[in-house]
Image 1 (cartoon, rainbow, N blue to C red):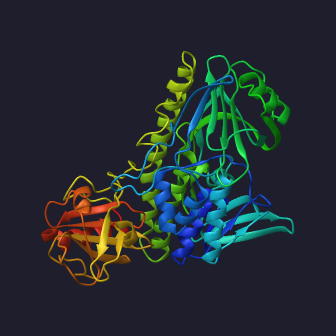
Image 2 (cartoon, rainbow, N blue to C red):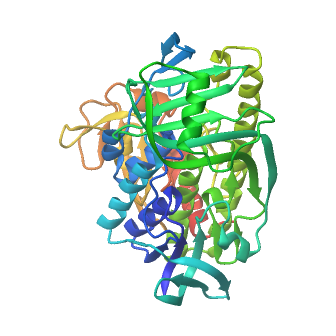
Image 3 (cartoon, rainbow, N blue to C red):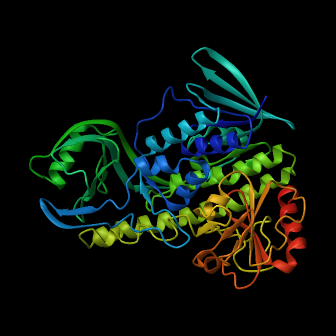
Length: 511
């Protein structure tokens, strides 16, 4: 019997499988499809998801394959109106190492599959879960393959199997929401001759709506997106001929030829949220739990963060922590999903209203901001958060440059956080209580000091004071960081022992 069965091998399932594998948890990941999907679908990896990629050890490959700050060239038919970086704006800011990256979903999935293979795991393709049941000790899934039907038992099951999730259905959770029939899109992956690949090409206006041709990095594919005018009777699955007709009507650039189309889809906006994230030993994550408007590029990224939140908690409970820890998954992630649904829906409506009275520039402004990056997501009311010493408990732990006091090597705080452990940062010139007790969770402790002459093991020098500024450390203090990069506690150094014992105890026995 495996520890965890993961149903669905998209970005959410692969993130969870990789995270569990590096923690030594035995898991199986099954996927109904016979082979990896080539459909581009999502194409924006937001900064918070990139920080997760960093922790999982795949950030270099993601940055190698992806692109940053792809310009948007806007047209009025054949005339170029403007060209500028409008959507994925930004450079790394203090505490934020990565700006948004453009990378198609199939390529991100490929990177995560390679990482899973390095950790000893693999996707079981052509394995469709048709039923799921559970008892007090395990979950049993009925799986259909080309070779016949079989059963898989595991201590826990996680449905990462999309909007039609069989796991969600069998565990008795209900997906509720709204369908926006007037917001429909033709989507597809096409090859185009005669068009510059250094930028996105965009036509937008009140007559036809939007036509976007986006060059997917590290491929020869373009993602075709075209809004369906209200009242137009669509033909079902679009064809290459339809894409060509739309291009001729809305763009008409001479010398440009749409040569073939692979994945093609008619997409209707649905906004839904599941009523429960957990029922007994079964969970849902990603699109199985929430379906968003694409405005703001948050759907895939929210699923990745679901997996990152759940992974360390499953590992902790399997290692002996109180099973009540798993209830904090819904407590923390469902409000985030609700906020993302509300945000993406309001952005969608604002964008479509703007197309009614503008040339499209207004509609594009405000599609992304600090919220869509995922960096402002916090868990201030979680039972795992204690706030005796400052307002930052429950927030994402920011990054900062530093230097190893023993070797002199320049690195970052994120280098200390990377891995499946909890991290304790002891700020100040004194050693504090960084290793003063036997913690009930896997913990690594470091001293962070602005004294350039400091020495000693597990000591890092805050060379320009940025770490102290970002963490607002004006006196000696302690910051305890969860395995998923969120601050569990911060307190003054003299209060350290009692506060640390309380905060780490919550992970093993949450209230």
